[in-house]
Length: 396
Ligand code: ADP
Ligand code: MG
Image (cartoon, rainbow, N blue to C red):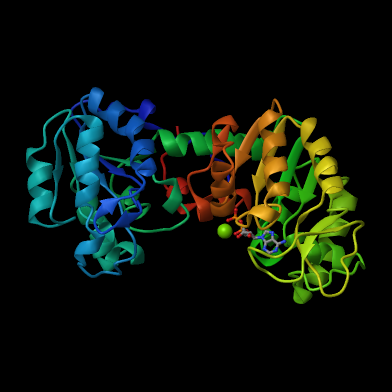
C-alpha cells in the first residue's frame, strides 16, 4: 500500500471550515465512568490544531458494539464531558448523528468550537457503509479528517463512506502510523528485524509472508514457534501446535532460506505441565520439548540469541509476545526482548493488541519509537493490505 502521498490536516486550509473528524473514542467504561482516557488524550493534538486554526470542529466516533440500537450505555456523553475537561472548553454533545440536533450543530457551530456527535454505531447504516447515511453525515461538514487508525481497516460510513462526498485528509495519529510503519515497510533503515510471536501461526500468516519479503532477520517466538519447530522435525510435547499448518510452516522456512532471511527459532524453553498461572516452570534445554510438557516461554539461550539479533538492528517491528506474558512465571522472555528493543538505538515499532499491552505492562512503552494505536488495523498494515480508511484519503 502506498501511503506516502496522503494528505494531512497540515496540507489544507481549515480556517472557518466545518471539519468532521472521525476519532477513536472507543474507551473502556465501567458504570458510565471512563476507566482509561488514553484514546481521548491521543486525539487531542489533531483537535487542538483544528481549533487553534479556526476550524469548526465536529467530532464523531463509535463506542462498543450497539449494533444499530440506541442503548444508553453506549452513549458518547461521558467522552464529551472528559473532552471538555481536557480542552478546557465546552464540548457540545449532539443527541444524534444525522438528525435534527446534529444539523443544528452544523448550522450554528462557530470557529474554534468543538462538538461531538452521538455514537455512529447507533445506526446500522454505519458498519454497512450505506451511501445515503454517509452522504448525510458528510453534509454536516466541508472537510473530513480521519484520525481513527483503530478502525481504518474497516470500510464504514464514517471511516470511508464520507470521503465520497467531501475532501478527506488524515489527522496526526494516522499520519504518524503511516509515516513510521509505512516507511519501515517501504524503505527500512537496515538491518531490519521482525520479532513475531503470539498464539497462532494462522493469525499471522499474512504478516509473516509480507515481512519475509522485507526483513533481514525474522525472529519467531511465542506459541507460534512450536508449529515451526515441529515442522523442522522437533518434538513439541503438549505445546500449542497447529497440525494443519505444518506444511505452511515448512514452506515459510524454505522461503526464508531462498530469500536469504535469517529465521531464528527458540533453542530452549521454559515449559509447564499445564496451562496455569501457578504451574511450576520447568527449564527445557535444547529445541525438543519432552512429552507431557508445554512450552510457555522462550528459555535463556533463546533470549541471548534473540537479543543479539535485535542489538544490531536499525529497524525493529514487533508483533506477538514471546510467551504467556500474562502469567508472572512465563513473562521473562517477553520482558527480556522488550528490554533489548528498548535499549537498542533503532526505530522500534510495536503492533498488535496483546503486544502493545505487554510492552505497556512491562514498562517499556515510552522507550519505543512507535506504539501502534490499532490492533487489527496494525496487523493488516503489516500484512501489506490496503486499509480502506487510509486508501480513501486524498493524495497530495
Ligand atoms: P497480538 O495481539 O499482539 O497480535 P496475539 O494475539 O497473536 O498477539 O498473541 C498473544 C497471546 O499469545 C497472549 O495471550 C499470550 O499468552 C499467547 N502466547 C504466547 N506464547 C504462548 C505459549 N507459549 N503458549 C500459549 N500461549 C502463548
Ligand atoms: Mg491478540
